[in-house]
Image (cartoon, rainbow, N blue to C red; front, side, top):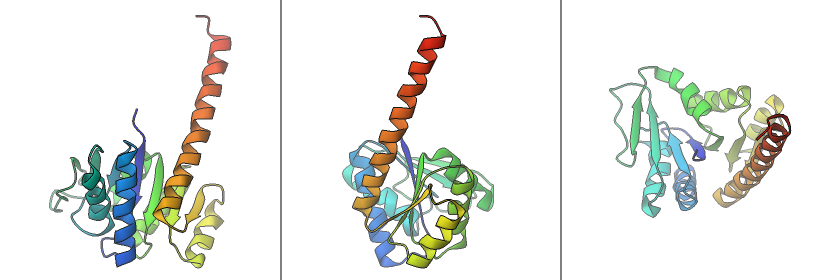
Length: 180
């Protein structure tokens, strides 16, 4: 199974958040991971998929709220949910990790809360100290801050390493109980 990185952020994003999303998309693509966004042709959603397609080799998935929403031309697999904001659950639950570029929209804030509730790691890129403190109150183990897209990728790599160790331990435990 391929590793899925959800890149979340507002439709009306600041320039720094768009730049960070593009860079993240490029980094994710270089590693052969899947980029998952809200799929629309605006904001962080479009920028992350654009970054991935600049490099090539990455699959981009867009989970859209309705059939009326315009799909980013950088999305390979659009998933039309007809769920409105309920699609945020799909975004979060499908992602192995959620990376956030900008917290100026209520949709993005809800995605962070849903991710924490689902036990998914969340990385806030260039977030304010107040935003980081607020979300860390929900679960300081799951919510991390990154000063740059590069640091976010480093944090993801550490998370993956820990995940792979847990999988190996579980496989070893199974080997003890299930004869070959």
